[in-house]
Length: 89
Image 1 (cartoon, rainbow, N blue to C red):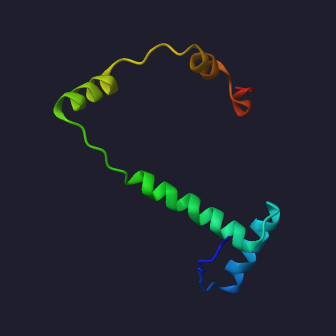
Image 2: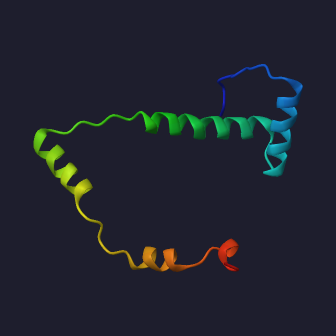
Image 3: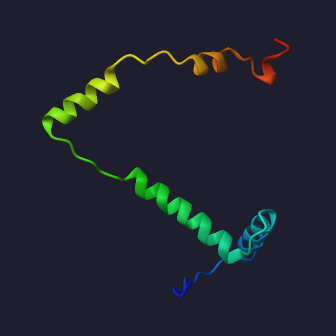
């Protein structure tokens, strides 16, 4: 059960835009705003996540990053497909 209130003020145009977007997804304003705000909050937190490695693990990590990519047949096949907007060229 939700019991923590979050209040904010918005311009009528902002409210209307939010309401319209929420209706396109079949959601009410509160559910839409909470979902979008949580998605953005998670992205911000993940962008700022810090991890540390000891010297040996750091060396292994850097070696993995610097190693040549393994062949990826699926990616190669995908890259060979022409984009629809390039079909006539």
